[in-house]
Image (tube, rainbow, N blue to C red; front, top):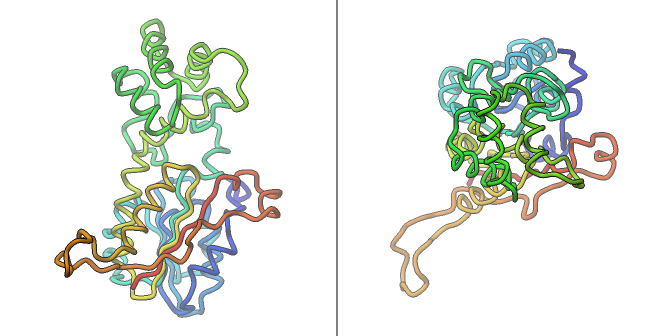
Length: 310
């Protein structure tokens, strides 16, 4: 994999400006990818600054290790899922951080790797695993899940209005022939949703299957809660999301972190004792500039939210 597949990190300047507040601090990049944001963080840090990085994709890790090799021992890289950031940090001998970055979802590099099955534009095996050691693929899901479970996944994770119909066609289609490739699946989706649409009819189904395969929403909330616990007072947690489901989880978690007493208003004094643990720095999410959008079409749906530990 060439580095160019990973060369455009989204909201690059905004991430660095919000995240790096202590040039001698210790930072965690939970979604290393090709190392674009990581390289920027390391360049902002002094020689005393340190970066710990996580990714579960072997190909991305190979690219990032080469890209970040000039920084030597200032960067430590782990293969893991960011839901296990606490395990990673203990392994790195770190108990407090100055900042954490999560750039969630599928990366440009993964989309550009045609054999991974993330894109409906390529005729390849239906895989969609970010971690190739994950035993479950998208093909396993479409060939073995019950119709009602497929419907739930497509509706909940893809926000697909035709979820029930697509699930029915998948179940019917797999009885005639095992669904093995992206083209097999796209063909069934187009049968379920005939006619022209403004966007590709398989887009939401592929998103939903990818989220299910990689447990993306489940691990996100876990990582946000664990991450905040590891931040020093004044440390920052920055999250880039790419669709409404991710952004909703981030927004709701950040709101919870920033909320104090939850007692009913009729009580004369607080009895819950809850105090805010963070303050929200981005009242509205930061969006890519027009200049960035013109240079990187994959930045269109990106949103950046940041909180600061109290």
